[in-house]
Each structure stands twice: as C-alpha cells, then as structure tokens.
Length: 590
Image (cartoon, rainbow, N blue to C red; front, side, top):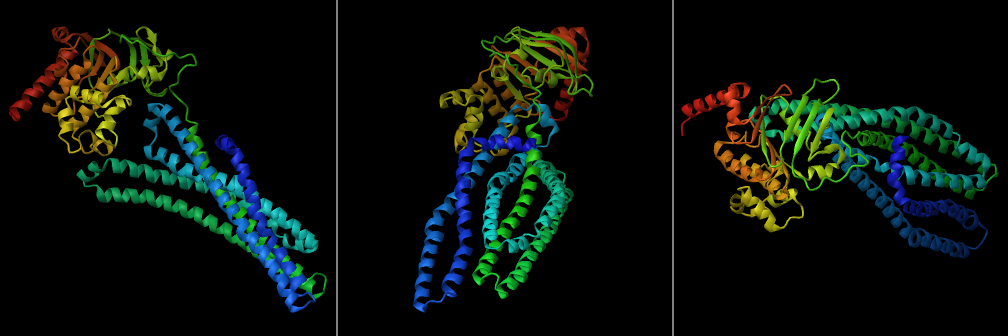
C-alpha cells in the first residue's frame, strides 16, 4: 500500500490527462458494444422480416453505412488519442520517477555505495521502474475501462434476457477464487526473478569494468562459468514465473470456455421453443464475447499488476534508503573561506559494530599551510580526510573550518570550497573538455586552457588529433595513468578551491610522470590550505608539518627535520623507503 501511495504522487500531476484518457477510452470501448445490437436488428428486423427483397437490401445498406461511419470515421481519432495519451502519461511518469530516484541517489552517502552493488542500483532504476508502467497503463486505465465494458455489456444482456445472463455469468465466482489463490504466489516469484536479474547485471557490470584483470589472469573460462551460474539462476526464476503464468492462464481459459457452452445449450433451447428470437440469441452470443474478453484482460491485468507491484516494492526499497548525511534545517552557506581546519576530540568508525578508526584526534591546520598525513596503510589517514567534505560524519567531537562547525553549513557550500585529487581519479566517458569542465561547468574555453596549462597537460592535449574534443572512453581508458591524473588536476585548478586534499596523488605513477605532476601539484597547493596523504615520504619533506598517524591516533607531529631528529616512527619509515629506493636504483640504474 505504501508503494502505491508513493506512485500516486507521481500520477497526481497528470490526473486531468488521466481523466480525459479514461473518457476517451469509454467511447473507444463503448462503440464496439453497439455491434451485437446492430446484429440483432439486422437479423430480426431485416433478414427475417416479412418485406420485399429490395426493401431488405435498402434497409441493410442504411445500417451498414451508418455502422461504417461509426466504426471508422468516429472511432479512428478516438482510438488514436486514447493510445497516445495513455502512453504519454506513462512515459512522463517513468521520467519523473527516474529523475526523482537519481536525485535521491545523489544524496545518499558513500556508505550506501560501498555496501550496494552498482548493477543492483542500475537494475532498480532501469528495469524495475520500467515494469511499473503497467500500474498506469493497466491499473489506472485498462482495468477501469474493462470494468466499464463489462458493466455496460451485462446491462444489455440483462435487458435481452435475465435467465440467459445468469447462465452466462455462472462461472464468475470461480474466476474470483482462481485470482485470489494464484496471484499471491506470483508476486513472490516475480520479486525473486527481479532480484536474480539484478544479480546478473551486477556481475556483468563488475566483470566488464574489470576485464583487464580477467584477461591478465586468463580467467575467461572460469568467469564464463560464474556468469552462467548466475544467468542460470535467473533462468530458473523466470521459468518459475512462466510456469505459474501458464497454470493461471490454463485455469482461466478453461473457465472461460465453459460459459459459451452453457449459453449455446440454454439459448438454443429457448430459440427452438420460441421463447426468444434468433436475433436476440445472436446478439446475446455477441455480448458473451464482450464480457469474457474484458474478463480475460482483467485476469491478465492481475498478472501484470502483480509483477508491477513487485517491481515497485524494489523501487520503494531504494527510495526509502535513509540519508546518513543531511543538512540541518538551519544550515547556512559557508562563504569567504580562509582555510583554517580544526579537529576537536574526533572519534570515528564506519558502523556501530566495528572498531574505532579514529580515536580522539585533535589537530589544527593553519590557513594556507601544507600538512602531510603519513603512516602505515589502514592507520586512518583516508578516513580523516573524508570527514572534511562530510563524506562521513564523526561520531564524537567537532570539525570546524574557520571556527565554523561544518555540520552547521550546507554540504554544497562546504564542498564547493574543497578540491580533491585521488590516486585513482575517475574520468567520465566524453571529451577532455567535458571532464575538465566538471571543475566549473560555466567556465570559458580560455579558463579551461589556463587550467590545463597550470596542470602541465595543455601540450599533451593539443598533440591529440581533436585536442580538447578528444573522446577518452569510459573511465578515461584511452589515456595513460599520468595523463588521467593531469586532467584531474586541471579539473581542480578550474574549481579553484580554498582547501586542497591530495590522497596519494602520485603514488601509482612512474618517476617521470610523478615529477611532472608533482610540479603541477606544487603550483596548485600555493596559497591554499593543503592536506596531503603521502606514500612516498621523499615528496613531502618540504611541507609545513607532517602528521604521523598510527592505529587511528596522532603518534608524531613536526617538520621533516624535527621528526628525523626525534628518531621515532617517521624516521624509521623514511629510512626504510630510502633504503628501498637505493636498492632499486642499484638494480635498475638509468
């Protein structure tokens, strides 16, 4: 019921068009209901009437001419507009739902995306939303029109002969029993099929994205078997739904075929005994088809609605995902940022069941200074910087920028002052220009070029056949790691933030690319508050302060010289890396 209430919100803006479509639909379904009456008149008043053959032919010609006008000239535009409006309403509602879902997805935290498969999300936004269209086309239109047709046809039938009508509808109670018994299980089977399809899509999405790994480890045969396992699971669920649909149709069609036999037997007897005319019997038999065709459609509609409701439940499950990070009702805009960042007694963990990732962090970063976070993997460095743009909220403590609690300002205004460069930056399919523009969608070509020059990537871009309009493929697959990194840096130059976060931005690159990118990063960090997560300690010896984080706590802090003189954790890690570098140079001298 909750899912239908949600759906009703999307239907509400189009209720006037729905009403117009229903009225047009009544005319569309009402016109064919006159055909049995036309047949009765033709049989009783023309064919069996005692009049000259010429008169019969003339009367028949008038009836056919009038019917031709009704069924072609009048019905044609009615049929057209009924179909067009019904599909227009459906398409607009699906558009609104997907638009709303995408907006909802934008507001969900990183925690949701870390716990949910991408293919699962795509399946719900595309497949399940598409399945819900039957709630409009079938549930809100066809069912009512079929009910209208059924009621009108029964009215005509009762007017023709009451006893014969009761004989014709004797099987209706069995319809009700069949629908009640069969469709409860169909909903469960349909939901299981949708989930199996989502599993197939999730697996396919991951494997296509990771195809280099599959090929490098020669996993093609193994991967094919794994996909087949999930594909076969979907096949089994689909066949279960098919089996239940087939059983339902077999039962319903059997019940449907009993009614004409009863009418032929009883109606034939009445014609023979002279209780009803042949024309009445012919008209009645024509109406029999007019009530059982809508009944068949109503049963099929039950199938479609059951499947659509199951899909709507899955859409609603996604829609009801709570927001972990929300703006306070009184949240203000963060403006005129200088860049002082302060962590006050910060405690953080990813969920209530896990251990603390950060423990009682107290740290002040001065405006315009450059601070490096170092330490072993898993120590909490990335978790610490993820709190600054509020990708997550600290469970205890307070984080401020220029003395303002970041939870008291809007997320949009907070993040607009923060630029981030990661080790593995995400580029989107499209052109280089479009990817740089993500830093500032309203930037001019001159500003894009200036950002590219600052990131040491302009010459490389200009060397490409189409320059800035070069297509880079999904995730920038056509570019090298260094080229992707420079475009990501150009993107941040274009954003021009007051606070800069560099998360191991050069650790995965060769020395030549690292030197080129390090130069652009130095320019980018100038006059900004900069936080660097460094893997290679040799790249951060000149920063204002180094913070050594171990097991979620600040273990050491100071300049490179101060920490080296202290002979502690930092010096130990620095000497190990320096020794490794000397060994590498000795083994692979240039």
